[in-house]
Length: 210
Image (cartoon, rainbow, N blue to C red; front, side):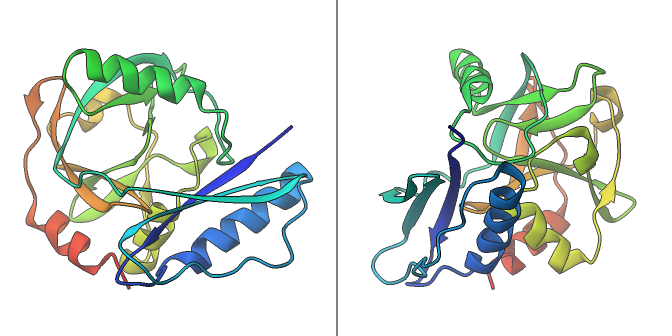
């Protein structure tokens, strides 16, 4: 049974990206034949945290967890091959393997590549880089998750330059990751090599939360 998951940031007592979560959830429910709950209460109030919403044919289940670190991220290239993941489901076994692999070498996350060697996404982040002053990232058509963080970035920059890029084509570029819980975070290193900084990343991060 398909179970969808939305991890929603509660920040300063509000869920600023709730509308983007609802939009993605509605799209996935329609595609997978999962009933969209008729009454979803907008999460709000209390301390900064993550509102965890599970939706399946059995109905919604709500939980909470902590936000986690927003320090610059150390990535390794994962040996786990990326497979299409167009809907955010609780079945994330391959991403769990990529994350565990990274932890064994004291990295923060693993960058997954497609069968064809194209940069896809990490276990918990969307991946982006700066290209001629523009935000670039993998195209959705290769099967990456349509992340809420990505949708928010698109609102801010107008359009993400979609690139089918190999690992070698992004090495040496200034990179960052993003998701709906922790916002925009710089990539500190890739496979042990320092990634160049770009002040545009910090500027984008400062604008991320409405």
